[in-house]
Length: 518
Image 1: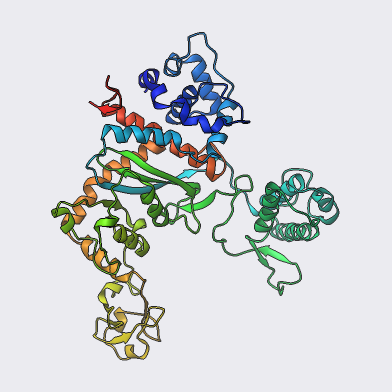
Image 2: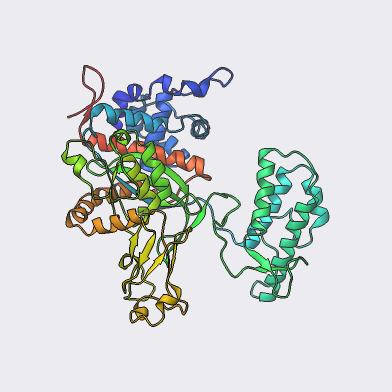
């Protein structure tokens, strides 16, 4: 990597690639662009902080050679990397370094004729400490005092639970449950009074964000006291976890995530599209670890549309999203391009299968496991669905019609049924709700029973797991706050890994120009 950048950093990162970051009135780069881009790539590859990266550039001869510096040249100040990172993140093309490496991939033809893509994700730990309810409310009120004009006077006049000019928690007997409950009640009351007495004014974005965050943290973890009607302002810690809960006021984007039922982690989720033969990453996205719209399947659909290395198959397919398209290989045998998408069961949603069918992609996705209502009993696949007639038949041959909301209610038909004990525990009979893409899901589960399907999935998954290991090696904890900067880091990390992978495959620059593999 060092030798390659020493020889080709100018061709890889030309000045015009970053020209829009320094348009009229925005200054000019104090450090050559190819030097900064090379440092950013090496920094993410070796998992260094800004200060560690500049120290390496100052004292490590490999870094000096890669960036074209003389032995006696000093490095730049670490804040230069922060300055560039912010400009990149706020630009129209924040992934331009990743795009530059993807352009090299395209020129080499490393992905030519490779029409399989694998989707996967992994949890990356955040760079902040998870805060409890007390810490969050105090921090949010202090932030309002800093950001909102006139808020400090309101806080001084309206609050009584804590001196908000001081950081940290109040001094109470923390092992006293009653004292903790009284503190939470007083803090929530302080937050509500502050929000209710702030002066009417047009808020700047930072001030508006601070007010919104205070309103959120003051309500997400509490509920009315047991003997309260919800209007007298008495609160306690809620006996549940709020969905999409904010876990830190320092980084409001980070979230709880459950890798398994008993293993909880806090942070972000890195989503990847990987070509499984070469291990080259073709698209990335970083999202909060949980929350609406951040599921593997939802992000995976968007990532595939952003993967410009894939051929356009929409014109070659007349796929019906209610039919079995998951096991169709006739297009492949006819010489047409068939894109295969490999993924685990987290991507096996009906919406995902429908999106793949609509684009003509073949889903090599591990199906969701079916969980019968009664252990060892009948699953939804044991019921026969007639979409044309709009009926559902149970294993005993009893038939009912689908409601407009796609419910199949057997109700009284289950009385006296000899198979009822294997079907439901409800006294009112079995009720099914069919997904809008139930036919696709059924066909997909049927195709997954095919040995060829299973073999394809197992054959190509190891390289994907290896790509995830490359991504997380020494990088399980992120260094930045917020989705935007961490997403930029992920794109730089993918660019560095791709470049290293291309070098392992024999990347070079022929005398005729362009890029090629040995």
